[in-house]
Structure formats: C-alpha cells, structure tokens
Amino acid sequence: MATHELIGKITVQENVDPIEENKIANTFVVHIPNPLVTYYTWFSEINRPNSVVFITKKPVSFEGILRATKNINNSENLELDGAKCEIQIGSIKYNGIRLKGIRRHSHIEKIQLAYKKEGFDFAKNVKIKNETDALIRLNKFFDLKHISGNIYQSPHNSDRYYIKIPKQISWEEFREHTIKIKNNISVTNFDIAKGIFYENDGIIDMLRIIKPNITIDMVKEIQKKYLDKLL
Image (cartoon, rainbow, N blue to C red; front, side, top):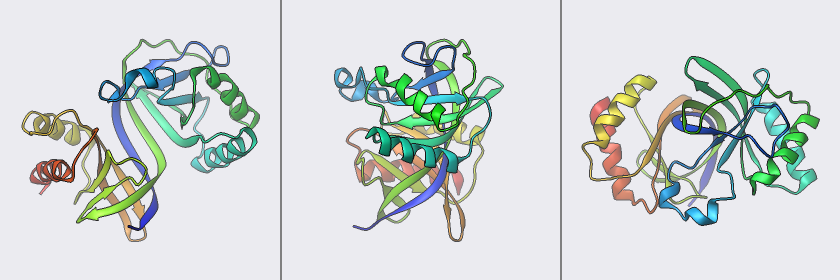
C-alpha cells in the first residue's frame, strides 16, 4: 500500500520531567515520557529516552533543525528525528528542538554538544518538578498509509493512526470533547492529540490516536465519537 509524507503540526498535553544529569551544565533540557509506557515493556525502555527537548534561547527554524539533524546523523552515525518544538508551562512558552531516537540518557550531552557545534544556543536551566503539566506543539514530518475513508496509519508504527476531521477546533474544545468521549466509549487507554497537515489544497485538520494493539474497529469507534461532536 502506497505511503506519502506530509509536513504538519501536532498539539498534545503531557506531563514532562526535567533532565538534570548527562547534559551541558546549566541548560534546560526536558524529557517527554511515553504516555503509554505502562502498556509497553517498561523494563526494555527504562534507559531509552522517549522524547528529549533541548530548550533554546530563542525560536529556531524547522529548516535549521532538519539541516543540523541530518549533519549530526551523518557525522555521528545516528538516527535522530528532529522537530521544531514549543512547550508551554503555565503562561510561559519555551522553544526548542524535540529529538527522538536517542538511545541512552548518557548520550544526551554528546548530542547536545553536536547541536551547539551546529550553531544552536541553549537556554539556562529552569527548575521544574517531575510530571509538570505542559502543552506541547510540534512541527514535524508525518508518514501516512491510507487505510479507508479519512483514516490513515503510520507505516512505521501499527499502533498509531490519524483521522481527518471536517473543521478546525480550539484546544479548549478538543479537551472538552475528549473528556466527555473518554467517559463514554468502549475503547480505553488511548492517547489522542490534535493537529494539522499541510496539503496542496490547504490545511487539513486531524486527530492522532495511539493505543497498543489498536484495531481498525477501535479507530472507527473513536472517529465516530468525535465526528458526532463536530458535525
């Protein structure tokens, strides 16, 4: 089945943790844990960061991140996935580089130094608690495999689906609908985020769904619940 790649944005609310070791001294580095870690094999993932964000002094461009990441992957024989990131904690917004593919926490400082060599300046450390509530916005590439109708699946992760929705909704609307839907649906323990794709004919609004061993019937049930709210 053919796949295609799109650029888009995604917004998700997660609890984040500070990284206090294995980093350049006095810089602000954040870990975004896997929200479904209790459903995966926890022990095999304990030393592997899920997503790490290097907070920068000022906003950085998506293009700059992509170029730097390619250079670092080539020179260090790595497979990092870099994205432009904004993290909002309370009323304060921070900008940075979100990285997936870091194999060990002990590798973080070396990778951070590689980005510094590429010209990125990092923000001074900010003290936050473990499991601090944060709103995270990412600019990234999406690989999609069309399944049926407005349903797509990641070709790299069978537990990750995307559904197109007919209109834009605010974060507040999305959050309100999600709370009600999760209290009135047979599908449990799924993680959901909202976002957009950029296509030739404009912006497409979408929802991203993650659940271990999710089936297409589960995806369709979630899709119906949201469409009932939006149409």
